[in-house]
Image (cartoon, rainbow, N blue to C red; front, top):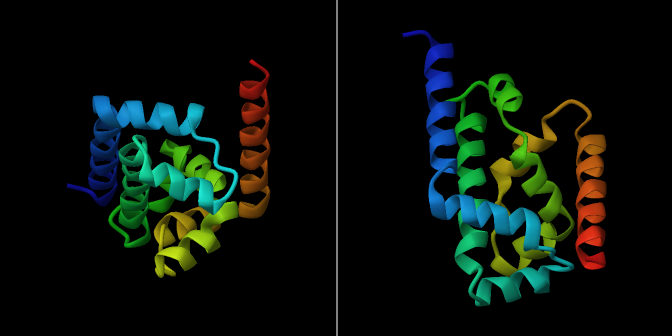
Length: 143
């Protein structure tokens, strides 16, 4: 079995996990309803009913990115097959330093960050995603 085949197989397994019903609900909540304004607002989520959704999405993408940063999945292939991890990072990036400090964990979501920041033009890509997130939040408020 070739390395590319094994990488593809792992990516397909990750995709299957994303299709699980509760993770799908969590992802829908994270993208549509979760609009953090500060690290404190994220800590409030972690105390409430959506805590499991937040943890499912962030731990899923940290796990997936860890497979890439540790060499189990080819980074280029992963990047061509996925983009959702960039959105997750872009949404949390403004608050990440405070979250790490509060948790006492300087590596919190470290593999997610490492993978996203390793992309060509990472800063402009992150900024683009953050602009889209802000526009979506504004549109949601207008409804």
